[in-house]
Image 1: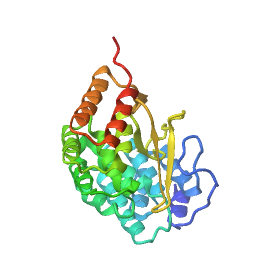
Image 2: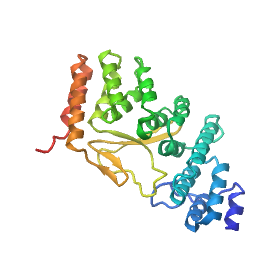
Image 3: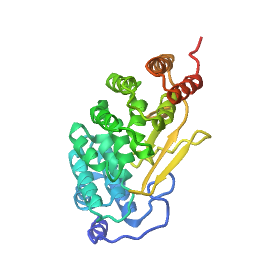
Image 4: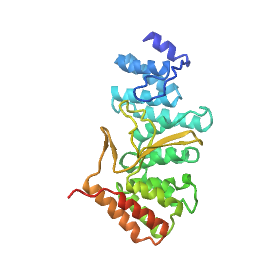
Length: 299
């Protein structure tokens, strides 16, 4: 413990050249290895040192790893400190103090342990990290980010960029889960406020494409699903990295799981409602393609 404490307080590191935070790859640096060693040692002294490092580090991956370890050792006790560390690091990153580091681990901390109090932080992050912030708003616990996601989608206007249309796509992704998201999507369609360029993304979301932040740094057992439906994305602006999977798949703690008949029927109904308020050929074609791609309920 004294040796670990001494090294971590130096604010120095040694890279091992392995992929950061990826399952099975081992620690990517000496600091991360020592942070994980603290979790294995356990006890009050190791817990206290982990908290101390959490309060002083601005490295996104270290914050996520420390948050995960503290949560495993003392569930719920240090979430406020973890959120504060993630917020402070995001502020530093927005000011250019963290270089071009991937801040996905910080958004994962906000998503996993945040509540309505982090919505303003996410909204402030959209100019620099539009994809990360929008996905996190869509996935906050109990739909607490959905009202703000609706506002972003309603402000889309008539742009043609993927970035500008992304809130509409994420609104479609969560629409089967949250009635207010569904109502907002239908209202946008009814008022003809959805750009032609957004309909393909909306349709594939309704058909089952699910967007996720990259590697899940808070879950040591998570692995990105593999298969022909997997798509990975890299956005140079903000160094944003994420993936999507195609088809009827939802993510649970144990991994992906197929939809129930009720979930399939709910998506069919929503697509039919959107078709009912649309005469736009682009929208109709995309929605019909999405409906045809849905699996049939079991007889």
